[in-house]
Length: 366
Image 1 (tube, rainbow, N blue to C red):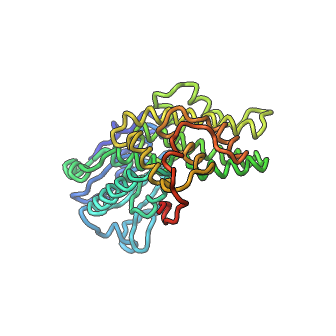
Image 2: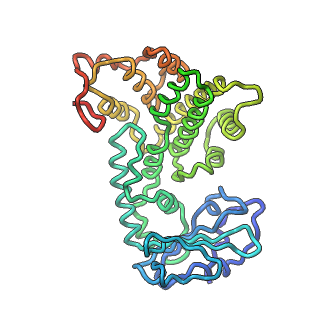
Image 3: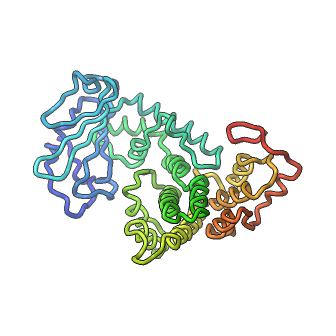
């Protein structure tokens, strides 16, 4: 019999469980790689978390097909067409459940190759990206491969995961998470209308996205926002910053606070988060360096466009990911509301001198 109890983190209030009863729900065959991962392993779980297993088979067999999947009583299983992807079952007399995903070694290898291509692509762009959606990359599986424990076929697991690079996965997660200029621009538009309540919704999203990005800058590969507070608590951040973020994100503005006042508090927190991101990225080898990032930004955001206030403010927002000494977001918000450019030291007018307005495509100037 396999044993995995020693790999489960200490979870307050967790029910006892029978390892054999858990493993009976997995339907292993000889040669499988059985990986244990999930929140019960990384320590972010609760008494109602699942045992997260991944079966990596040599090739597809009856467990991968709807009609021949070995179903048991009360089990739910998830399919895509005829392909069975996962199953779930509760443990009797417990809040715990057993979640099993089914992959082949070839599918995992293809996913790792797809992520390598995605990482190379995202290293060449400076803006937040949703390109992962069409990249054939399952971030949940990728994240779990960075810390998962092989319970069977450890040699096969080591061979399959040789190309897993956690830092690169953290960077792609960062590039798809960190707060974006379109979100800030929407916030500025709502603010200019005096709609502070809607601006507050946008400010909260901008804040959560930026703090998610901060965890990725520190190497976190898990993109699930429900664990954000737990991930932040593990980072070497100023205690006051984490406390302020958790208070505002969890409980909202204090009694009597106006929406506009809370929007500005969110912007202050985002500025502080970007300062921590700048410090963290200097130590993260897989991240694009600060100077390289600013070069990407210069080339990506209208290098050949005439200078104007809107472009200047866009640079001012985006560059704070890698540049110190930029005006705080409060000032940028004031400038955008007044349709003027916030004062900053970036040499945008020098870059744009003698250029004409862009006639290019795909967000690149001609």
